[in-house]
Each structure stands twice: as structure tokens, then as C-alpha cells.
Length: 135
Image (cartoon, rainbow, N blue to C red; front, side, top):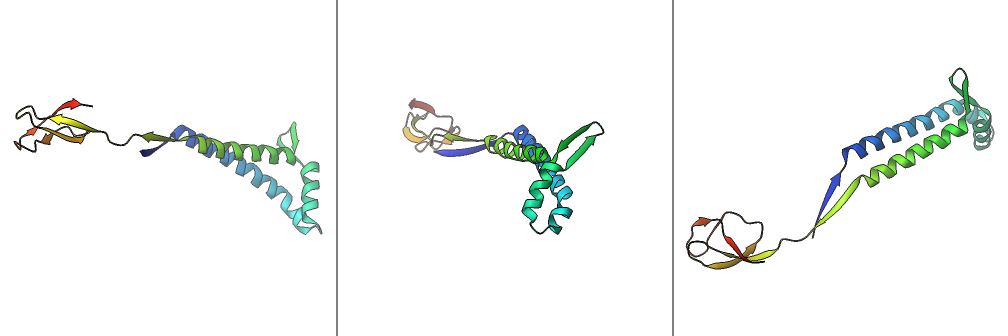
């Protein structure tokens, strides 16, 4: 059995875009909360309260909490990794099959791999396209 890996370029591109969006959103959250959370006595508690109280303005009339950006970034990152994993396909090919060939000139028969096309006959030494006698 042979294993062949097939990669889908569109899946790789989509997963890269989703991972970049997810990492960017998580980096923005860290960038906004780091100055206040690092100077607090309990950084984890300060970070957690900042996530639910701090708001981010993307468009002047559109505000949302940083916790939503963390959720969106995590979802994008996980979906990007899943798409990357699922865009890879393993195919299992059967091993080479051995068949019985016959020379068209001397009618000598021999066994060989099925993928042979132009071969030298073992008896008459002529280069020929052998005929498959049995499968």
C-alpha cells in the first residue's frame, strides 16, 4: 500500500486567513489590556474585568466589549486550524500488481509489474510492448 498526501490550496489559503484574523484579534485584546493588567496586583483578575468592561470602537456608532473579540478570535483560530487539518487528504493506493506478459514475437511468457510498458523480452531480447495474458 502506498500513501499519497493531497493538499488543497484553497483550504490552506482559507485556513491561513482565518488564523491571521484570529491571531490579530487576540493580539488587539492583549494590546489594549496589557498596560492596566500588568500594573495590577492580581493581573488575571484585572484582565478578566477589563474584558467585560472595556469597549472597542471600530466604527463611531459600533462598540463592543473586548470579551466578544476574544471569543471571535478564538473561534477563528480554531476553525482555521480545523480547515487546515481537513484540507489534507491521504489516499491509499494498492501495491503494484504482478501480471503475466507475453512477447508478440517469440510468444514467451513472463511475470512482471503491471506498470511496465516498453520492455525487453527475456528470450528474444527485442524491445516490445508485451501483451497481458492474465490479470
